[in-house]
Structures are given as structure tokens and as C-alpha cells.
Length: 163
Image (tube, rainbow, N blue to C red; front, side):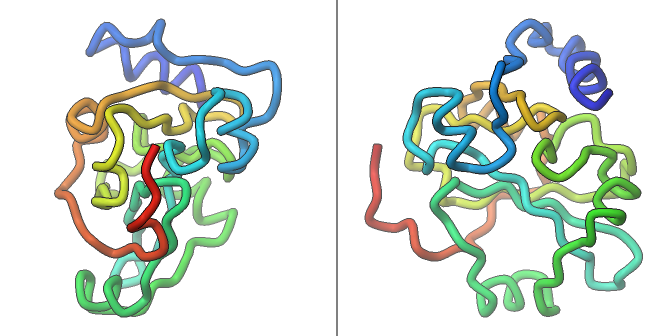
């Protein structure tokens, strides 16, 4: 089970007990916000895209209220944004849709990027490998624990919303 892989992954940081397993689904931003008890913007959603070569994936973690800006994406990565199919998500990431997160990734060549849309918040809540799990992290912790390549600006639609 992916949540167990994520818990195991967090042992190296002594954070395995911080993984929360919800009774209800947290598979969408709205459901996750309800499960955690925060506004949807504080849910750190992990989006999976094909890399430029099309032979692997990149993960972009964004605030729950942000949307990918295709122009910004192309400027950052040099190609159009193309999301992975559900099968490719399992193949490259190892977590099912609804539980995709930047931790315990199956393919270690997958690069993780964090979008600036999350920097508005002291803490955010990414999924933890299942459709009913999450973990509360500061942006600095998210950067460290996800082994993020860098912070990027590829989103729109969130600029005026604060918690």
C-alpha cells in the first residue's frame, strides 16, 4: 500500500507518525480540505506531467486553488503541459490518482518542483500516498522532504486569496 511506503519514507525524518489517515476520502482538493478542516487553497496538490522527452515524469506541487498556466509551464520546461495517464502515474510515481504525493516515488528519476502559490501559507497539506491521507508540513519541510529540484512559478488563479 502506498501510504505504508510513505510512512516508511518518513521514518528517515522521524515524521512517520505525522502521516494522517482520514476516515473519509481526501482524493480531491475539496474532500481533502473537508477532511483536514482547512480552506482548499492550503491543500498541496501534486500534479503529474510528462517530461520534455516523454519518457518519464515531473511532479509539480501547487496550492489547492492554483491552476497550471500553460504559457508559464512552457516557458519553464520548454514543452506543452501533458498530464500522465492513470497507468503512467502508477508506472512512474507508484501512487494512485487521489494519493499522488512527492514522497516515496517509485522512479527516482522523477523530478519534483514546488510552485510559489503555496508560499502564502505557513503550512500546507499534501497527500501521503493514498486517497484518504495527508501530512501537514511547512513549505521548508515540503521542500526538504520532497527533495524538490526548485521553486517555480507556473500557476495562475490564486494570487489574491489568503488564509
